[in-house]
Image (cartoon, rainbow over all chains, first blue to last red; front, top):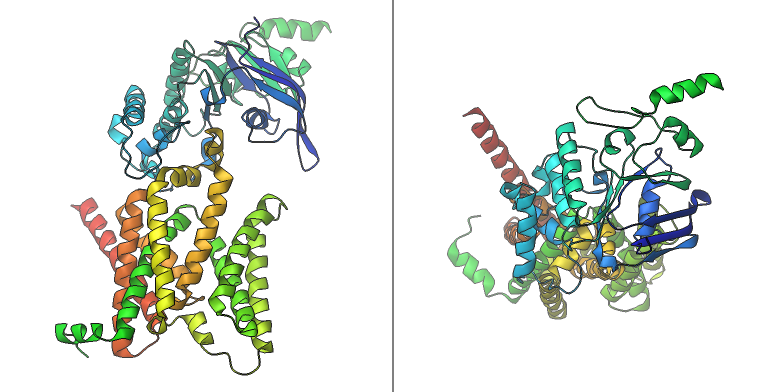
Length: 257
Length: 280
C-alpha cells in the first residue's frame, strides 16, 4: 500500500521547552479507521493540531497526498463558546472551504442545500435555525459533525467526539462513523479505548511517542510495552473487544514470569 | 418640563441639536455593529484597554497642540494591535497585556496634560463626552466610519462570523484569520476614538455592550443582533440626549442611564413573560 493519505515523519512538538511529541511517525491509509488513544496530556490533540498545521512542529514533517481541504475536522467541543450568537445552519456552512461569497445577502444555493442535506441525514432538521446555545450535547456534536463533512472529506479527524454526550448517542455516533468509513478514512481520538476498539480497524497509542498497532485488538501488555498506560473503562451497553480475548492469556503469562 | 411635538420640532431647527442628532445616529450605527462583534467574541475587556490607552494620545495631542482625537486614534490602534501581539508573540497573558496598555496609556495622558502649559480645554468632554459640542468635521468622520463599517460587515459577514466563532477551525478551512483579527481590532479602535466625543472615554464601553445585551434578549443570531443593537443604541442615545437637554444634566451620563433603563425594562418584561408562560 503506497497510496498513503498523510505521512507524519519524525515529528517533534514542544510547548515552552516541554516536549509533548517526540519523533512521532504515523501514516494514514485510505479507508483506515484509526483510533488514537493514550493518557491525558500524552499528546493526542497535539498530534492532530500539528497534522492540521495549527501547531508548529519543532522538527519533522507532515506530508499530505490529498488536498488539505479534503480533510474534515471536529475539534473538542469544550473549545467552543456555546453562547456565541450563531445558528446551526451557519455553523454547518462554516465548514465550507474554497471560493465562496461571504456577503450577508449572498444566497449560495449549492452550499445551503448541501448543508441542509447533511443536517437532515443527521436527523436534526428541526433545529436548523436554532442558536447553538439551545442545543443538547448530542445535537451539538451532530452539528459539528455536519460542519466537518461540508467538503466531502477524504479524511475525517475527530477529537474526543464521545465527551459531553449520553452513551446512547455515543454508540449512534460511532455507528454513523462506521458508515462514513466506507467513503473516507477516519482518525478518531479518544481516551476511552474500551468503547472505540469495537469500531476502529487500527490503533495508534500516543504518549510522547506514537506506536502504530495494525489491529483493533490490543492487550494491556502491549499497551505497557508501548509505554501507553491506560485505564480501560467500558460501559455495559457498549460493545467492546479490548482485553476480552487477551485477558486470560495475559493472566497466565503474568504468573509464569 | 413636558416635551411636545412643537418643542421637538423647534429643537431640530438649532444647529447644535441637529449635530447632536446626527452624532447619536452615527454612534448608534458604528457602536451597534462593532459592539455586536465585541460582545459575541467576549473581548469587552480588550475594548476597555483600547479605550483607556487612547487617553495617552489625547494628552500628547494637547501637549503638541494637535487635535487630541488624532493622538487618540494613533494610541488606540497601536494599543489594540499591541495587546494582540503581546498575547500571541510575547506570550503575556491576555488580561495582563490589556492591563499594561490600559494603565500605560492613562499614565502618558496624565503626564502630558500636566506638562501642557495652562488649562486643557474640553478635557472633561473627552472623559465624559459632550454630544452637543461635536464639530462638523467629526460628524463627517463618524458618518464615513458608519458607512465603511456597514459595508464591511455586509460584504464580509461570513468571514467575520466564522473567524469570530471558531478561530482555530477557521484556520483549517484556510480563512485569513490573522488578517481579519488585526483588521477588526483596528476598526474597534477607530470606532472607540470617533465616539469618544459622544459619551466619553469612561462611558464608551456601555455603548458597545448595553444595546447588544438588550438585543441578545430578542435574538441569538449575529446577523439579527447587529441591526437590533443599532436600533437600541439609537433609542438610548436619542432619548438620553433629549433627557439631558430638558433636565440639564451631562449628555454622556444621561445616554448611559437611558441605555441601562432600556435594558432593565426589557429584561424585566422578558422575566415576567417567562414566569407567566411557565405557570400558565
